[in-house]
Length: 510
Image 1 (cartoon, rainbow, N blue to C red):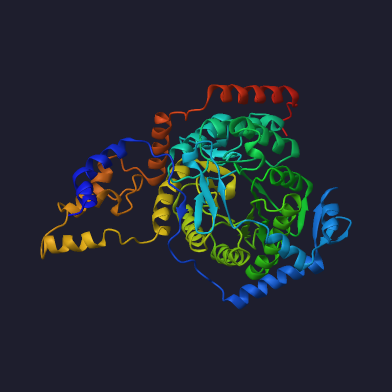
Image 2 (cartoon, helix red, strand yellow; image 1 turned 120 degrees about the horizontal axis):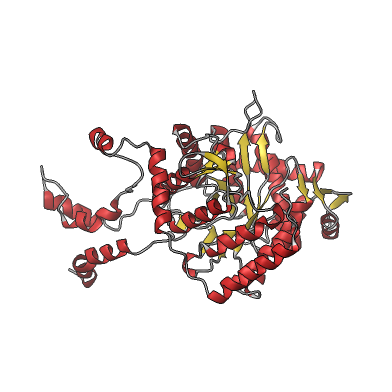
């Protein structure tokens, strides 16, 4: 027996018991070790690519502000007012400047993650005005809810980020809301976070607050915050989004360039046609960031849902949404760009079977399409209008399963497993073997919210459904929450900045 084997057999169980008592506040970056799924042959992907280039060359994309058209004109594009027609050579030259992978730094270096390549991170939802609360009731979100979700994101090891506007703190005046959102994300968690893009001033406030925490010089060059900008499909990047791009990209901060497409309404009623249009819109946004700061890390993105052609309502986990995700992944790899999609974005109003069906359809596609930044993976209900406490927790549990699924099958204990077969022989059992005792904790995915007991046991414990167990898990985690450490001077500086800006900003509720 080698020294390594001897050490593992003699001290492994005690060490694992000690680890169980220690908090694990984030899984490492998921490094996918399974193949990506190529839905289309290369020639079909090339056809979509070429049509996207033609859209930008012949139809053009609007950049609706005073600065962007001039920047495009200086770069050599054909500019007519706010309409920009981009030569394919210029476009691809700019796309080629984006790094294929980058490091996203957390205020706690142990939570720092990699984005791009074979790396994947899981990020909770964003932007819900309503919550499905700890008693299962639907109501407007509050600052307390937002802080709770940041706490749950911090405590859930499956999540690599705390997002930012998981739910809107509706009682806080809109001009001041961003200050409390970012203060909460930075203080209630030490994982990476997301920025605000609703105005230039608010984006600048985010960078100032990040500068207080990370250091002003550090945030000029090192990625610490991801922000989302949406193209208004079809083919319009508006001033608000362009302002946010300029603030963040100039600081070398990654921006998700993601058209918000309601397929059949803001795109043609064709999955492939929608992909070609959305690809053109995303590429135009990515390219613009390289006019701001060449070489800045960026994230190619998409949010594509189909609409119910009878009512016009957006739908969540449909087969077309999954298919389009696969194709966007193929295009992202063609361009060597880190890319974002969404995971558990469902249309279901409650945490029920429909929510599970929709979520599984989309997350399977997100994982197998090789997405690097999978957003909206915890809490999403009601097409994004609500964030559910129960859904947040049950989603996180499922992410643990997807993390293991995408990590691939390992052969590191195969020899020992075969030795166990020889040890037990015919008609025995493996429960007491050295191999089982060594590996039982990590051998298989072991959820705690899902129930696999007998009917009698389940009934004796209250006959609780999945939604109830999820809410109970949220309550228990919030009761056990301990705030991550932050230097007292930084905490005070953040509070002073928030107070100063609150004094300067109006008390408007819209």
